[in-house]
Length: 181
Image (cartoon, rainbow, N blue to C red):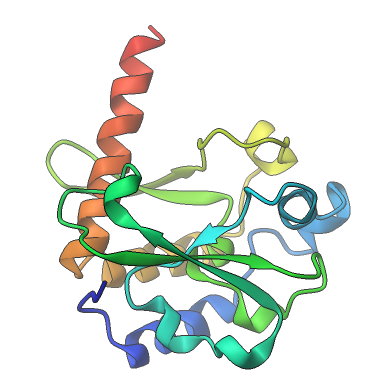
């Protein structure tokens, strides 16, 4: 599946996010790198690459396992047609930090669009098989990380396919939150 986001845009977003970290220390020190190592323990865990993000990864690099998913077999937005890539690090937590996919780089935050299409960042609220202390404690994150993450997602949602994904996840989240009340 082809998105509109170009390879150079992904590279620019990667460079922007390379300069920041959620906290001023290795957050893996407080949890044993649970977000990386849980993926190693459970083969169903990994990261979905955004449409076109595979262009910035060398498949022959050997540090990722690649799985092609047919979009209509999963709960992707209706605009998503064809295949999307799902990747897993083969040797967590010792994956090349500078090569991490977008959604690893922006964790523990996730983009959210309100009903008017306004973008905000919230703590990741996906159903995770582990506890992230930063999410659990709503740790105050480095402001530079938050700004860079917001800038990155503002650029990424210019791609209609990525926008549709963030919109769908936001509506699903809102519906779930309404059900929990």
